[in-house]
Length: 101
Image 1 (spheres, rainbow, N blue to C red):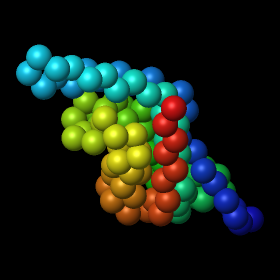
Image 2: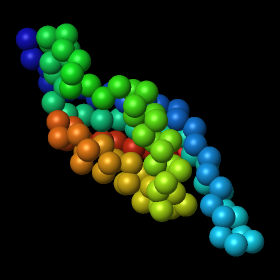
Image 3: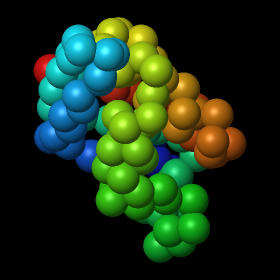
């Protein structure tokens, strides 16, 4: 048995951050869908979940990056920051798709 395609992650992650700059405040509020792809076929074909990044870990990572990212006010850069985090942190992941609303 072989698996040709698998993508998973977390959808509808709500984040809100207030960025304060002196008397000026900006708000970033997003609903985020973060999905990953990579060498995860053993979780489907051999019941071996050691290669799986838990979906709650994906959600928690998005929340931490929403709090710490210098790019949170720029949606495109913030989405790129999230996607790059997953493919650089986990060697077995080759692609990350992040959508922000």
